[in-house]
Image (tube, helix red, strand yellow):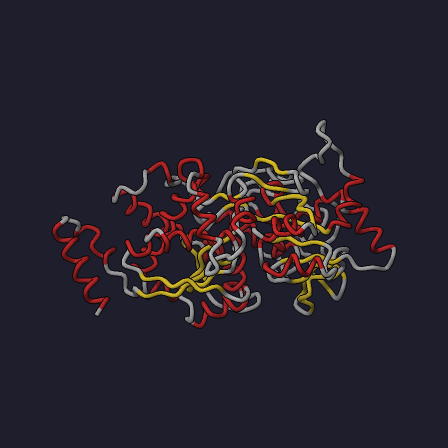
Length: 457
């Protein structure tokens, strides 16, 4: 009955407004939806789209459900228990190419830029500081490279002790950022192979999966020496006095893509207007989060602190969500772009972002065999759906909710080449194999893992 009344009301509104050109937008094929998320601050567009009634504006009645971990979340999207979800950028790509759980997962919307950091225990930090120069103010100079960690890792190995670090999932942005940072400092984070999915072949630092909310307690217990995770779990270590964030992903790769909104390809085919409505609502939420120089962030912090969303103390969430980031206790620095939800075209699903994640899967052996450049582009275009995004953008412009300059209508899906990485290596998404050749640590060319060795080396 609710669906009938809503549909009838929207039909009349469309007729009297003379909006026949976009009438189809007023009839989502499925209007009651359940969407999953993990308790991280970058799920914010979902919470805001619900709390600000942007979903309802599209005739969508959305229930948001926190999930236990990334695997459960992905599995429930595949089975249809969830209609869509806040996902790691690597998840739709990995599933589509059949790494781990196989399914065609797609995304029309990138949820944010940046938002992660690498934290180490107090004892590791004390040893790292010996290798870090200080500025005139007596504070450590940033960004801090893994060069400062390498002597610590070497000492552990010399003592016969493993150096263990946590990340949230094998195809997570956190895994690839942590690996990138370590390798840039000369620390091998290890390889995957079809016969050994631990990711620890030849590893000098042993990385393993820990769910985000459990990161601080796992480090405090001494199970791991550090971790890479999203907020608020780095700032939680600062507030608890158990660790120090040493570098943010903004410094590892400036304005890197973080999460995406993932759906099955079958869902988008069966419910195209619903998909469009979801995308419109999420774009509006992202705009709200960044508008007027982040003027709405305090309100966003209050919303996210509620138990049904992130459920962390508002003070902890605000420490990174409102334009600052705290490293060592008391060392709070400006970080306007630590969380970006709309500016810099953050929500557009760029093919070059997808290709970067695929290069890291290849670099560390999750893609076991060499692939030519065209393969990377083809996979990116099968997973990232900018046409849906731009259609949603045009509708928002027509409705007066956005302006043409808010969106990159003239892009071919590839960002310009950039060297804004912590190691200064240049990335061009059009040439993934040349990019892989740039790294002294990592698979490239015809390399394959044979047992515990790289064949041919």
